[in-house]
Length: 244
Image 1 (cartoon, rainbow, N blue to C red):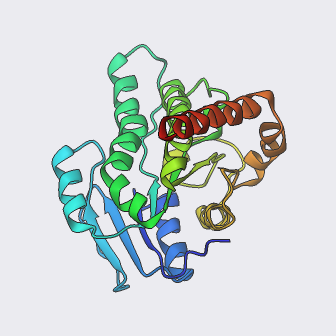
Image 2: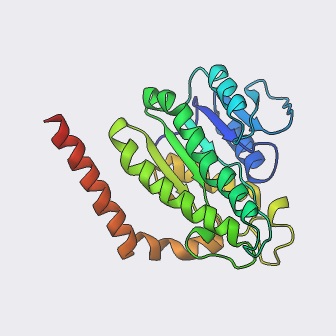
């Protein structure tokens, strides 16, 4: 078990919804420092919180964040966007990919040297729509499926450098983002607790709510998960061969 106590954590989208709940949960578990990445100015009464003005699509803000953060144990790629659409406007799809896919990639690459140094962890907040698209939010679903593939690739490539990569498959949660979606929803607090439980227990794939948990066993025992492990083993063997 790897506790959050004493760790330095960076959470994007930390001012509302699941991100805000993750911020409070990290503090509750004794994090040494929590960097709160937000698109708008943000303040917090706990002195362990350092606000970062950080739009994940803004290269200048990302460079400034890298200059501000001196050490890092856990990067939580939580920031995301979701809009109802019908795929008729390519710009909507591009916006989802910019935030939900390339934002995750860019943040991880930018902070990778610190994570390698600490032998830390990347936590990518995905969605159950990564497995099956929800037709009322297809652009979001596509971006999360792409981010899932990115997460699996990061996991295989970074394992040899001592960095763990977690995929979080969130079901419907009671946040502003899903306000108009009519379905039973988990609370952000319960989702945040389950996410950090999964990180502390070193679970590769985290299913943090009742809806997503119905998929957990099927995924973990699926041919697709077995293939992911097989491909990851090939990557490990390739690294070992190149070092021989």
